[in-house]
Image (cartoon, rainbow over all chains, first blue to last red; front, top):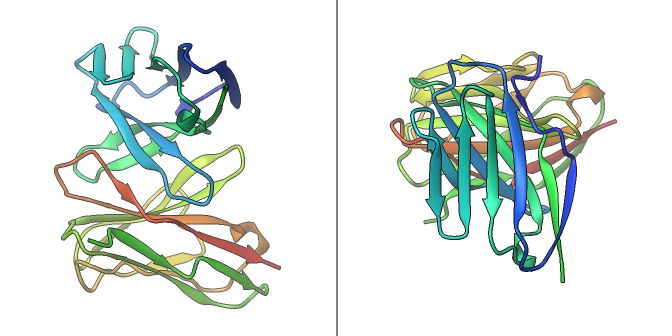
Length: 113
Length: 112
């Protein structure tokens, strides 16, 4: 029972264009959603988050949108840069007291010059 | 700050062997956790701890033990390794009121 799903295993985008990564969830009790970025042979690093009471959060080139009625969130990267090539994981916080995170399967983003 | 450190980076075990994966953090974080990453599965929570002396099970705890005797260290023990435990293991830590978790570089474990 996958509570957080990233249905696109991979995405290829031209440098300078917009990258849009998608994530769907099933548990309406999630209170925070996060995006992590992972390079090969490294641990995931935190990128951006959004509270379930918000519908948008922006940090530089990165914007996360949350559509609670559709149980869907997306990460927009504008403009995309070669250094953005990585695996991106969507995650949701399941239990405020314990900071338990539920992760999606990940999407491999490749930025082409 | 070294952040979150994990040892070893790589390990090969035979079925039935036991071992301990080490995790340490120097940020005085209350919360620590262990995840495993498998292809097509994302990261799955194995065990977590909200403070020294307190641990609890995550999504996939079977075959693993943890203890938290200090704030800094959170070792993960494999009691009797099985091929299904072949995976990349990540340790993470955070302040108890922060949603941002800091991850270690991972341990790649192969069980033959």
